[in-house]
Image (cartoon, rainbow, N blue to C red; front, side, top):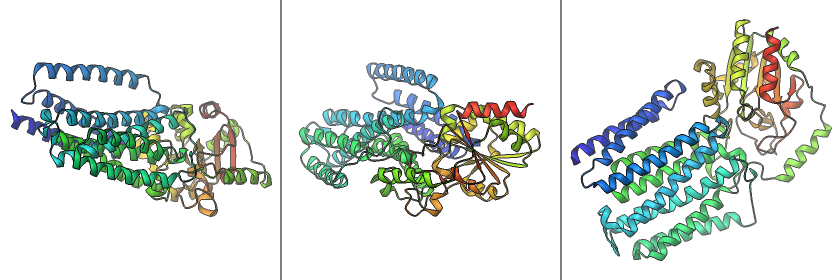
Length: 468
């Protein structure tokens, strides 16, 4: 039976790898999800049939699956697409807390895990346990803060105070000292001190990060949750947990790197504070608006007329599209324009929205063909030939200041070259800046026409005008 369990775990591990591979592209993402679900089902059954499992243990696991699965299904069925980022952050927090609970179970009942006896746990197991505990606790509290910021229950602006980074560094060193002391002594007191300090560190690490950096934070916390699971996998001797945790940890780390590259920043820079930290700078930018030419405001009918006569149109979706749930009507508009003979494509910035792949998911939900959706490097050369760029709720990722203003908080961040299109329609509720707290120069360009209003309503009016 042990051999069969190991074989089942191996098959599940391969399926998880295939799932990760499938999720790397929209066209194969559904297949990747299917592989992941099959792999998890195999893993659960194999765990239930492991040698030494009694009926009481199986009953408890099944009860946990029913309760947790029921809650998960209920939440997933009710969640809006706009709330996916905070849902992911909430799920990460649960993974972190699970790691804390498993570490506590292994510490207080080491015999059940074959790592020694109470008061005499193997040194290697104490190392693995303390790392899983620390990373899990940091993941939990950090994810809770990310959830609160993403859900609007806490200000998305960076929360900073004097000496914050020195405090974090000091707590990091203290945490390392506590881990070393815990491994040497196996003290109950030190175990819980590691947990409390890690909870505090997770809170302090995420609060200074601004809303513009949330995509990186989400992927970073995803990586943390994976490493926490891997650490606990070593503690309890579960090969599948080690493999799965390492996959999640490594993929999250790589995704964080890609996100940072998309913003031309280092992960250290993100961790030391987010965009929008300089309120004075933002105020100065707002004050400079008084010296600019007034923006040109247009109507949906104006946009429909110009777009109906355009040959090449690029749609640039952002978080505003997600908030308005406008993806379906955007696709409807694109279908009408294609019937008129226009070439319509979509431009996706790596950090558009509030989590990696946010815009891709929304467009896939609206059945937008995958071959019409293009990443930044692929689509940027096309803007110069575009008759129209239709920007719907994307702000910082289209701001030309990232290329020209060295004093700007977003200077150096690769952006979509929207300003190169012949005409730019910018759909927005008002003139407010984006998460970076930086005024968008694109609003004032002579080829830009602002379409003020709810993104879905404005696009619906364009659709109606196109149908006349």
